[in-house]
Amino acid sequence: MSKRQLLLVSTSKIHGQGYMAYLRDELRTFFRNVNTVTFVPFARPGGISHDEYTQIARDGFAPAGIDIKGVHEGNYLENIINAEAIFVGGGNTFVLTKTMHEEGLLDPIRKRVSEGMPYMGSSAGTNLAGLTVGTTNDMPIVWPPSLEALQLIDFNINPHYLDPDPDSKHMGETRETRIKEFHHFNEQLVLGLREGSWLNIQGEEITLKGTHHARLFRKGRKPEELAPGVITRLL
Image (cartoon, rainbow, N blue to C red):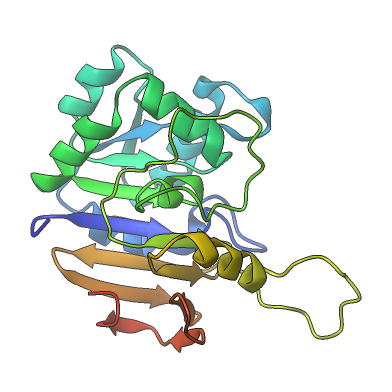
């Protein structure tokens, strides 16, 4: 996808700041040629309505001078086809994926992105950009017909990636352990994206931005830390 424009963020909020506040400058730059972004609220967290979730996004994008329209405000497919840009919000990845499959929206979004339409994902919306949603942190509270995702990138992402706490007495599995379990059955690369970091992808160039390194997992190899900047190891 040489025309692709992707903004894939780990989280919509960081500690002590409001919704999308830490990304305001990035939003202005990424959506500089866009007046209205079509928001997909299907992962809606905490049982809030699509309208309520859309208003949260609208309020968060307003300081960057960007208008938000909910994809549910009218015909889903028509709104995707006519969108200037799309933002898929966070929440539960399985709820999101199930709805996207059932509404037949994956192929139309892939087509629009291949034509150059900007796509932004946060958390669950970032999971959806990968090959599959098999590296989400969410509970499967519903079950989609397939774990296939948008495949806008040729690897998976683990948003909200957490490093093990050496002082913790917690005996459960770490994120790294879970990703290694994933690689027992799957081949694709997995990028652990820490909160406060994001990927800006323009065509074939992938740039890690934000305040943290990312952690790259390859099957059968030791994890690798990637510093902010242009990433060549994912190409």
